Structure formats: C-alpha cells, structure tokens
Image (cartoon, rainbow over all chains, first blue to last red):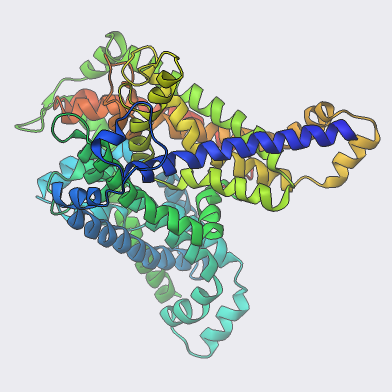
Length: 274
Length: 287
C-alpha cells in the first residue's frame, strides 16, 4: 500500500506544479501591465514592478478608442445572449410542446448547423452583408448569431424533462402558449438557461474572428480586435501597454469564472453531454 | 390542431430563417463561388473546376495542409494525454484537486486573443521573461516565435496550455462515472495500478477518448486566432495553417474563388470526422 500512496502524492504534486504554470502567466501579465517600458523589457525579468505605473491603463484607453470597444463588446455580447435566449426558447418549445410539423427535419437541420463553424461561412456572409451595405454595423455582429444550434439542443433536452401534465394543466386553465412558456416552462428550466446565457456572453465576449472579418471601423469593433491591434501599433511593441489592454479583455472573464465557475464549466463542457 | 401547427411554425421561423441565411446559404454560395474567379469587385467569372485543380495539383495548399495536420496532431495528442494524466492525478483528491482543476480550466474560458497576447510577450525572443530568465542563468535563449523551426511547435504548446483543462474535466467526469467497486475488485485480484488502468479504466474511458479525439481534431482544424495574433502565419510561412491561409486568400489577396474552393474541400474532412464521432461516441454528447 505504501508505494501506491507515494505515487499518488507525487502525481498530485505534479498536477499542482502544472496548475501553477497555468496561473503564473496571468500574474506575469498583471505585473507587466504595471511596469515601466524599460522594466517590462528588462533582462533578467523582475517579478514585481519596482514602482507601480497605473498610467499604462490610461495609455491603453488613450492610444485606441478602448472605451468604445469595451462598450461595443458589452452591447454585442449582451444583445446576442438576450436574443438567443428568446429565439432558442421559442424554437425548443415548438419542438417539444407543439409537436412542430417536420420536427425531425428541423432537428437534423439544427444538428447540421451546429457542425458548420464560422470559419466555413465567413466569405459568403461577408459578400452578402457587403451587398446590403451592412458591414461595419451591429447588425453584422449580432443577427448572424441571433439563434444558437447548441442552445436549441440544450434547451430542448431540458424541456423534455418538464412533465407534460404540468403544461397540460396550465393549458386547461386557459393559459396561452407564450404564458405557459414564460410562467411555467422557463422557471422550471432556469439552471439550463442561466448556464447557456453565461456561455453565450463569454463566447461572444471572446470572439475575434467574426468581428475581424465583418468590421473595419472603430465605431463597432470589439475589445479582442482592439486589444490585438495594440500590439501592431507603431515601432517596437509597448508590452506594458499591451499587457494592460490584455488585462482589460481577460480580467472580466476570469472574474466571471471565479464567481460562476460551476455554471461555466457545465456550459463549456455541455456539448460533450456531461 | 391546425392553429397549433401554425403557431409551432411561427415559433420556429426566426431560428430557421437565421439558419437558412447564415448557415445553409453560405455553404451553397461557397460551392458557387468556388467555381468562379472573383476579386470582390466586378462580376464573378465562371472558371469551372479550375480553382480545385490548382489547389489540388499546385504546391500552394500542400504545405498548408501538412502544417495544419501537424498542428492538429500535436495539439490534440498533447491536450488528451495531458488531460488524462491530470484527471488521473486529481481524481478523488477533494479540495486540493478542485483548486487544481479550476486553475487549469480557467484558460479554456479565456479568449484565444487574451492567451495569444500573453504568450506573445512571454515567448518574445528579445525581451520576453522566458528568454530573459534563460539568458540570465547562462542558457541560450531561443526565438520561440521568430525561428521557423520552432514557431509551429510553440503555437502547439500554447494551444495545449489553453485547452488541456477541457480534456481534463471530461476525463474527470468519465472517471466519476466508473464504479469504485470495479477498482476495488481489481485491487483484490492483485492487479497493479498500471494493470488496473490498462484493463479496467482505459476501456471504460474509450467513449470519452473517441469524443475528445474527434472534437479536438475538428476544433484544431479551425485554429485561427492564435496564428493571427502570435505570428501572422510567419516566419516564412512556418505557421500558415488552413483557416489563416483561407482568410489571407480572401481578404489580403481578394482571391475569392480559391478561398471558397478551399472551404469546400475543408468540409470533406469535417464531414468525415463528424460521422466518425457519431459512430464511435454513441450517446456521447450532441455531436
């Protein structure tokens, strides 16, 4: 038994060291964001800043319309999540409780859409939006993501666990479908909806590819694109400013993860059926 | 009854319209565009299978494919092996294990841009802390992202670092599902730890392994952000992988035809992998 215990401890120690390697870079980022340009590039590197330079954060907001990017990111990811929740609930309700005609076909279509990533669709969508003069608009960032195949499959599954008698009883009481959906079904599947909404917000907060393709204008661009541009500005990378920008885009997600970890782990691994 | 059906269609319609315009139409449009020559201006010109012929015969796409496969193989193998080892180490260790799990999974939730910028600094050949630390103890500092022989490997390591938490969490969930009695029975029969793993745990983890293999491969075929932010495809094209190549064809060189043809060709492995995933991972997830 004894060697097994030793092996076990050794394994945990190795995992702990690896976990440290996962966390340390974020601390380097935070520390770097508060250093001077000279110190952030020094060899050998310093662990903690010799003097704090919070003005790096002001430089971030001055060298790019970062406040605008931040606002756009909040608006876009918030709007997408809100609209997705509505459309996903309606679609799933139709599939589960209204026995939508061609339900099997619809489900196959949803499954197929789940498997077609943005990387496969961006050229034609770009051309389509350009034809209607919709590039560089919130429309281009929000509407193509207004519904979610993953969301429909998850919410449908959750709705199937709602006892049909409950819905039937509400219907006999004279409630319309929207009332049943809003007052009976939604409260019963709240955990699923919360997890999905969190997933959606974080996913679109993080999105880089779609925004990069569909926008060139600062007025609609979002944080990931803006912060990535910080690196390309001017001659020589101002790593202290880039790290400060990176804190702005990364910290909200890390804070959300710290507070809603259970939901987020569930949501991000859900497509695996766990 | 009729009214219920009409209402059902009404509820489905917004989602179906989005899927039709932004999912189905793009695929069909890609097929059409792939048979044309077009620079986003003017009128597309019919060229038949010319784009496909050039892609499949020329040496433009070949090296890109090889690099994409190398990137995918490295990333998937690394994150699966790492995820499995971490899961086995952390499984049933209570709060310490929980903390380790959280620390490792956090990077999966953070954006690719955030992770890529972070590692661009850490791996910078001149001023990066890693090179700096190596140099200050007298070791040679490598130019992780600037050396064509190292750059793709560096991107693989960064990608593993970001996603290994996902594999770990799925393996952990699968381990939780395995009845402890099975391990106890194996131990009573005198099986060593390795034998228990090899003959009891590994076969039971197979659906998870298959699922991670397929989804991981699909995901890494789509890799873009990490290339765009960290290397821009360089140095000397050493990190030019599939989606980044398509993106440049379309928006740097305005060669919409070849870009679309490349997307259509991309659908083939995507379809095969999905079909494989559904076969091997019966009942696993929504894939």
